[in-house]
Image (cartoon, rainbow, N blue to C red; front, side, top):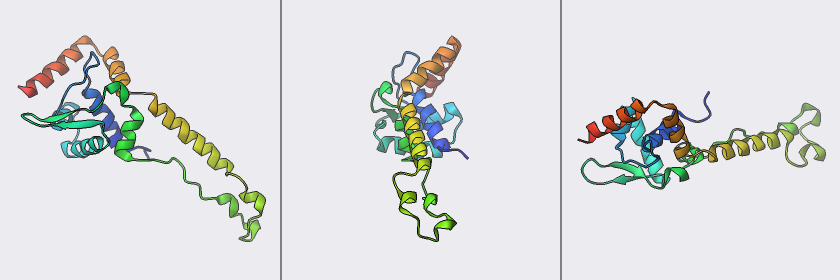
Length: 167
């Protein structure tokens, strides 16, 4: 089972679409992004509602409408997107099993309850490292990595595809 929902992946890729090959932000509608990525429009619209509430994108009024990044792509981290879409995710919930051993006859000794559980401390450290790793990567980093890998024709094809929908 996935830890983060598919919405997080959709959100990250969608924000990457809103960055061009030069690293500049571009305005796009949810419909354009959904069509470009071949993802369900209704689902993506819900994701953009969450991204907007989190202050990562803002809506644009007027003909065509759509969304724009609410701050520079280099200031939007993967962690920001994950938190906006899925909220606070804990990888572990301690059940204090250490205090429930049958030999304790429902009265755990003080030493068994003392301090933080060793298992919990390891899992808390893993949580912290995961969040730190997600916070180290920005939408701009990911977009640049994609464009470095892609052939020049891809950049042109995407620009032309977007321009054709705006016309």
